[in-house]
Amino acid sequence: MKQDLKTRFSLQAFFATLLRPFMSDSPTDVPGLFVLVESRTDVAAWQTLLMSTHLSLQCRLKRATYCKCNRYKQHEFLLLHFRHWNSESAVATVVIERVPKQDPSDNSSSKLIHKSNLIYPSASETAARDAVYTSSQGSTFPQYLADAYTPFTQLHTLDFPPLACPSAAQISILLSVVNEQAPNYHLYQNQCYWFAFTVWETLKKLFPDCIETHNTPIDQRAHYCGLAIRKADSVEAVCRDYGVRWRNIENEEELKRKADEAKERQVVQGLAQGQAERDRMQTEINELRAALSESTRYVGTR
Image (cartoon, rainbow, N blue to C red; front, side, top):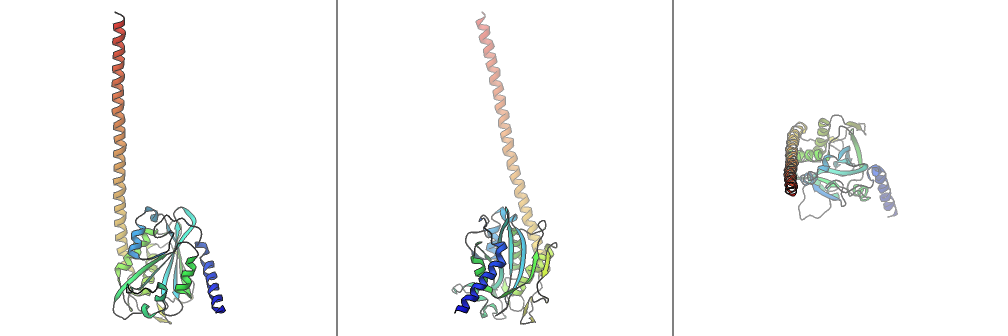
């Protein structure tokens, strides 16, 4: 028992050290990213949260980490580290992963998924849950990682330069596109390996200025006990669909911006016209007063 406690606390210390750069006191003004309460939601709902505020366009992806569990089904997931729009030191870390969607009546926590046979259902398709876990920016995040994924290895990292990094809004769109590409979980094509790999490789293609670091001598992605696991090749399709989706969003934003500018111009023009009318009326009043004064002076001289 003492040994278990010692191991547990040593793991907590390890994760606290690992994530200390990303655990600074953070604001809570960006729904789905910088929040007071931790949450776990699907990618569609996460996209809705982020697109509800323009601040998500200013929160930028600083680093991505490709992780692989060392035991059980050797589950793969990504850690994404986002910089706050108004604070260089404030960083939000989220987990993204694919798991089979559970029965709503099953109240087991997400951490049990990676340690059970649910991660490997039958070869037939079942609904997938592409999930995003958002930390509350507190000390609970290292504990969550320790409980849900320990032990795991950080296989690769992607670092994004400040002038060429995707926004949180763009990442939310990318995750939704990946999900729509294969909404079902399939053991031999669209499992957690496929999801993590597709997101990772798409990021590299869409944002080619990123710097990839390999932390292991051999690429262990999409391998189980040393054996390569089949997965669908969807990177090109996701890049294409993402490009279409993001251009549509940019066009919508441009139309909205132009509409807002037109309304602003109308207000300014209305104010200017109102001022011009007030000036005209004031001129007429002054002329009437002058005429009245002249008339009064004329009567007084008679």
